[in-house]
Length: 394
Image: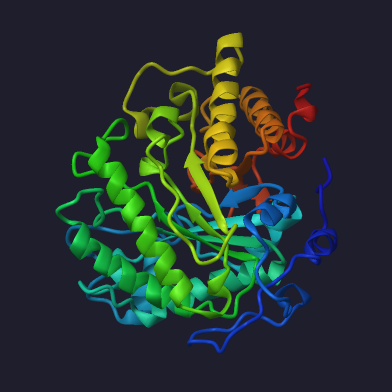
């Protein structure tokens, strides 16, 4: 199947997006001057974003390598550390050509997950060279005319615990002060996501207790206040918040609370949903032998429908904010046809409930795109996603 959108068409479709009016840059690389970085009054709202957002792709494991133990890169010169950290999980460094190829296949958002653990000191002061590289990747997206969802990972240093919250939130605040300062002049195409999948000290994915939920709500108030205070386009930038563990569980998400925000209508919720896990994951990352290579029973379809309907009910209907699934996908164990059926139904049902989707790609078993050859590995899967299941008869 031919590419669904050319680069020119993608840029044309996005050219109407509003961009916030810039303030004086606080340092770092400025975004390229394009019609998409124009001088409108403020950033588009969260619901305006949802109208323009089609489907996203995760640049997984590209900037998120970390170690909480002995750092094997510690002896390298700063520039060498920055280069080496990007390839520690096996993927090549991101390039403009890579982002352009993803855009040309129909994606109009790139989610970039970044770890700062091994690139900052104990007070949260980030290595400027690492931030330079983050800015460079964000600008690849700006150049391509697609959204960039920039997120941080707390893996290795953050936990949803009350006794460690004061110290961790101080480091977190300092970290985001520097990130936000680099992007005061980047407009609506850039969104910030607070943090990726924070757990409590026990590493519980389910039912961690009310303290953990309260800590996450407090952390998101710190995040919103810090970004807004950075000024420029950050004053009205769309900000993305995940519940505890980025869970899709309806009972757990009852405890999610919206932070107060000086910018009305600029908050988006995000969850991660790989369901059923014994179809979506494999032996390496699930640790179980009970795996399925087929999907599509009436019960499985109903469960996925109920999950997505529940997301709409909790976040959009009750809290009044858009919701996206920031990570979903299926490993390459099952046949491409089975995976395409699953992805197609997922996309069709999410569209029915107004839930946005960002496909996970880690460069490994979730990979749909070869980052070295810039070619697509599984066209049937991508076609099913782009057509919302029409290509597989949904």
